[in-house]
Length: 345
Image (cartoon, rainbow, N blue to C red):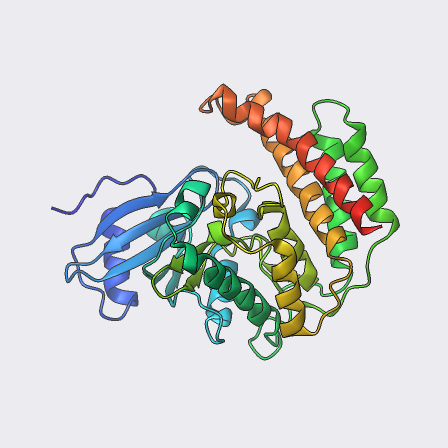
């Protein structure tokens, strides 16, 4: 018996919309929330004939529509889907709020595993870990090779000055959200701003590219689909490559808790950088800068989350240990950014 009482889904109206707008969709539909929180909500939809789909909508009670632009996300995935980069197939977009209270889009269901912890990373056969990592970086190189004009994304965003604009944004955000003085954060911001690398062209920049935002076909040793395109824009290709380095386990085997490489047996980030350079021909000599830049960005984001909880803007539905993780993570990320900048100097 399909479940009809699902937060964020007007069962009857969405069901009618699916039958009318998604070719072959057959009622009744069962909706299951598979990813929630403050990001966009993701539901698995199963039709009466057993066909599975995925529906994405903004979080409940959101205010800033620009931060959860379903039409933009649908546009990006549709465009990328016309290339060889693996993404789900978009099947329909609804911009009529009368249907479900907010816009949503529907895409194909892709089988796979999200490797978002060292424990899951350890379940991957040792012989497969390198192959999966190589395909992950190859997918990133392929994404960055896409002709943005040819796929209709040339007007998605401004193309030049990506890092400079991002630094201004996140430095300003730090000043607005900080809950205490942390000189290391200020030092990182100053050091980054003083020596911005020359941008090597403009590409589709995912903005959050890592194993945790991909569905992986472990048996096939490949990335089955890249997910979570909310932060996607046009920008500096090395920003994505550097961001991956913030999550990837270092020589000491330590990685962020939502990354699988801490399980060991995965190639180093340096090795992936070399592979990316060989495939793209880009100069990666300043990659330490981009890792530091990404760590600074994550530090400011972490402080923002911490500040919102401390100020009561996000309720009290968080464990004290997680709150402490956000607080201490700000300094840890900033210290690691400074170390990267010194290494690359």
